[in-house]
Image (tube, rainbow, N blue to C red):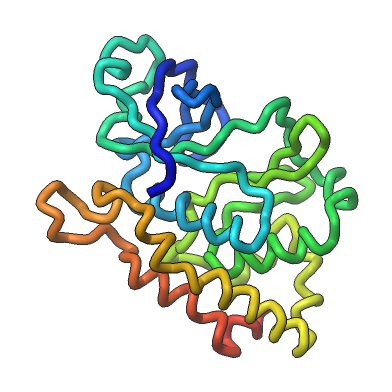
Length: 247
């Protein structure tokens, strides 16, 4: 299991995010985290967060460290923070807060290394994550800059989307202009090897997940969907031409 930390102060609910607004919580390891609770997010979203973070870090993407967080029921019960009941239900997903973070905008793109842009595009395509869009009218890019201007990649709760649209992805992804890079056969072979190495740790990655996220209820009979097998099937598509064709 990843290190489990304990919540000691629920600071406030963040305005970051659309479908799920995380809470800023101080933990007993001295760090602050953006936290999504099981009661509001549901197991599938938290699984997507954890798997996305682990696979992304395997690809050497700058994803903040994450932890499982235990939030004592008494801390929730006595908190005056609005919507705090969203944090109930069991272990939560906690992403370490990035200090002095600022928003990523269109003007940030050219200062982002091209190799990193390409890798993020490939990563989101691989895990079926449409939630990294940015255009002239704005968007939900889920990228932030730290105090030194370094990129951080966050929020993967909408990955492994069964309603994933290739067309929408290609028209809205913040780094869509990088797709021509993947038309080269040698590049595809190199990227395939990189994805193969990342997915080779699948058993270790899924072993990090709490049972409360994997099963629908405490009886631990019915699995949440998409199941881990469904997710692995999605990831394995990189071995086929249909994965690379639209890129």
